[in-house]
Image (cartoon, rainbow, N blue to C red):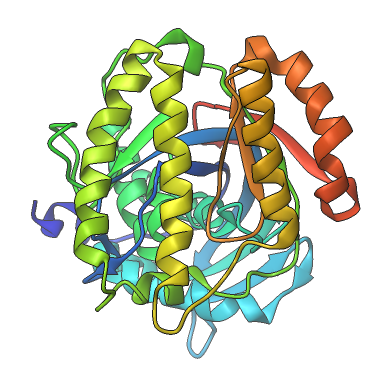
Length: 356
C-alpha cells in the first residue's frame, strides 16, 4: 500500500469546530513491537469498548505569524506534559494534510477513565483527535465515502499511538497484515466483514483498577524493547498463529479456546517485558491475587470468566453478558479488595467512535 493515497493537498480556509468521542480498546492478540513510522511487528485484534472513552473538541482557526500550533486543555486545565506527544502527532500527520500547518488548534479533552494506567488512554485520545482532524479535512472532500473517512482517521490515529488505529470502529478491529484477514494491513485498522458469534456482540469487560497511577514504563519504551529481544521472532510467529485460532473461536463461539488464547496473550505480553533488557515487572501483588482467584473461580464454577492485561497492573475481566449477575457477585465479594479504593469500571463491547 502506498501512503501517498492518504495525501490531499488542497487549499483550506475558514474556521471550523468539531467534537468527537473515541473509545478505548482491549487487545485480545497483543501488538508489541514496532518499526518504521508506527508500523506493527505483528498483527493484533481488539474488542472496542463503549464506556472507557475520550471526548475531544477542537477549534480550527487560521494561524498567524509566530502563533503556536495548538493549545491544550485536559479536564479544563492546562496540561503541558501532554504537549510533546501532541506536537509529535501534528508533525507526523503534516505530510498527509499539509494545509493543517496554516491552522491553530484549540484542543480540549476529557477521559471517562484514569489516564495512563494501562487502559489504552493514548489510544482513545489520539483516535478522538485524529477524528477531529479528518472531520475538518472532510469539508474539502465532499466525495469522501464513510470508508474513506474511517480509513484516514485510523491511519492518522496510528501516527499518534499505534493502538489508536483500533479505536475508530468496532466491535472487533484488526490491525496489522494477517493471512487470517485478507484486507488487513499495517497502515490502518479494519473492522473485518466477518459474522462474529452473537455471544460476543455484548461481551462484558469489567476493568479492575489495581493502580490508577501513571505506568512505570511507557508503551513507547516497551515496544522499543522488542528490538533485539531474544524471544522476538518466536513471539511474532505466535501472534500470527494466535490470531488465526482466535478468529475461529470468535466466529464459532468457542469460549474455551477464546479464554485459553486470550489469557495466553496477556501473560506473553508481560513475559516479554520481564525478559527484555532492561527488565520490567508491571504486575503487582494484587494483580496476581486477582488472576489466581479468577482461574480458581472458573475451575470451580465452569463459568467462562477470563482475564487479560495491557502493559500495566490493571486487570480486564471478560465474560458473556448472560453470566454477568453471578460473576459480578464474585467480583464484588472477592476481587474488589485487591483494587485501589475498591475501584472498577463496568464496560462492554461497543461499536466505535461518534461525533458529538
